[in-house]
Amino acid sequence: MTYFNWPVIETTVFAEMPVALRRPVPTEWSRANKGGAPVDCFLEGPCWDAHGNLWLVDIPHGRILRVSSQGDWDVVSEYDGEPNGLALRHDGTLLIADYKNGLLSLDPATGAVTPFLTRRNSERFKGPNDLIVARNGDVYFTDQGQTGLHDPTGRVYRLRTDGRLDCLLANGPSPNGLVLTPDESALFVAMTRDNAVWRLPLLADGSTSKVGRFAQFYGTSGPDGMAMDAAGHLFVAHASLGAVFVVSPHGEPLARIASCRGRTTTNVALTPDGHSLVITESATGTILRARWTPPPHD
Image (cartoon, rainbow, N blue to C red; front, side, top):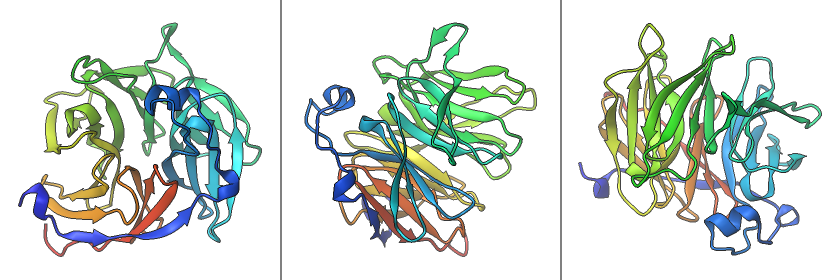
């Protein structure tokens, strides 16, 4: 099966940022990433909490947003930063991967944002992009910055619960979204500028070895945010193709979830019941939804 004949799964609009919350003004982020054009919002980092609320970031305006199960939007926090990724910790707080400030902690009840991990050995990060929390509380995150094939120095880190920080990879061409396998024996990382997803086996001593390219894509951007279901199916949001690609645990193409809005599909998350997906279409400020039924045999 080629990239061009993957079976298609259609999407619908789940929610759209209200006009009252949009800010069509230039920002430092839009000047660096969009040629200075006004960007009224750029949604990323979908994350569910235990109450059925969907949390999102608005990168250029430094906002953390919450969408209730009834579809109501709230700005929970606004601060001087560029939040990109979100992850729920076991204590109910949220961790933010912030491009400008490192890792931050958000109290959902008050909206207070505080530093969590801002430097490594006194050195600032290149620009964190995304993060996930393992079952034991360890935090895996990508340090993307402006890396790419011209400068493959992006990093993948693990922050252990005892405070130790392990650099698992230091040669990534734009490490972006990441997911752990259901048994947490391997880590998948979207390498945007390689237009690929890499697989990092996690060894018993905490290191990684035999890192390989698990899936290859194409286009002007590349894989961005990702999700994985309990059976190991990988969902890869591609930031320029207007689609989320579904890949089997063996790396075989299964389906293409097509955006019904724009082409800037930046991230994806499974709903709490595991039967649907939500997708951020960042150019239009829209959250898309698609039903997901695993195939009977992979």
